[in-house]
Length: 262
Image (spheres, rainbow, N blue to C red):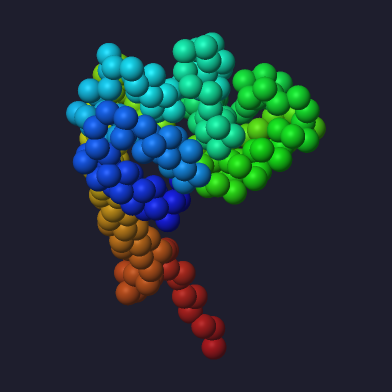
């Protein structure tokens, strides 16, 4: 339900509650009928909770409290099962209750088969069903969906919520509590994984630094070895400053000179 429709519904509820708060007994019946017939109203718990409405219980008008409960929590099928003890509904009320029935079906299943919808709404053919879903549900803003004629189903990604049924709040709180516990456990697991990743990152940085330092040490070692080898090479093969020539000259036997005959 979009914001504009929610705001309009809130204004209608406030007006009906204000009027109902000043009435008692039979004077409340027209307000109840108006509320359950209004084309833009899909919530009834505020009216049902009024003390003077609750006072209708046990009176000759108690069936109108049942009508309010039907529109707050029930479906078209529920009405058919209890039609003998509930006042006959007007066409506007019938349309409203069928709209609410679609919302109830969409609570538990986001893909609604045509056959299920036709059975729940007492619709006899697909054309009538699709016209109802388009004109009275989607255009009304209470659902957003897509009609799949090939698969014969109504896909409903969004449906407006209905009034909470008795006991439903406790179930919702239990579900939310379980979700919270699961979320906390998941968050703890994620935090542990983040810590592990941080530790691994620090270890990796340390190993990388050690490897880089090792490479530098090897480079320095190789550089020093290169300098030593270079000096040794020069000493072995460089110019000996005439020493070898002198030694060879000293060792080499001298030739005798023969006297020259004149």
